[in-house]
Length: 243
Image (cartoon, rainbow, N blue to C red; front, top):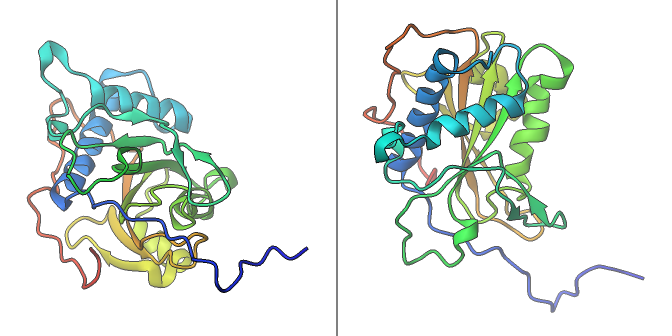
């Protein structure tokens, strides 16, 4: 029996939610870098040897710490709790998916029609020379989850986070894998890259999404008290149509 949709049947389109403002998306990137700088100073986790789940658990814990009622990751003062592996409904047949980290601002715009589908969703991956953590796996098991609508089906932005163990940088590593999806590298930050992915062919169609790729160097161990460079104050050269 044919399962093709009749031409007269209305095409279902995933309704988009309003995007997270760029200033808040950049605050999340700054907070992740802050947590990364504190990882070895305050925990027993070694990002050169620990598993992805263990590393991400520690980052989530650092981002949510609030001694004496003041959030340590002050960049997230406008956000609620960072959610670890929160489930959401995907665009296609795979009913439930769980991005590694979910960042949701405390203030919800009136235009949001489904709060569970609104936020900045992040997927975390180890990148190293082994076959299990290669750049290809980063794309197939990470980037692809956003591209096919499993993650952030209603959002026009998302976040990929890499724990990099061999000193790679995102543009040089991903340019042969993602090709035309790469729209820009950050003008002053070699570990920040942006890609745009058309999702009009997803079934059902989803809004085009821009992914920020934040690559964290696992080889580096910041000295105590070292300041983490902030991207918040930097001007981003956004291309036309990037949102």
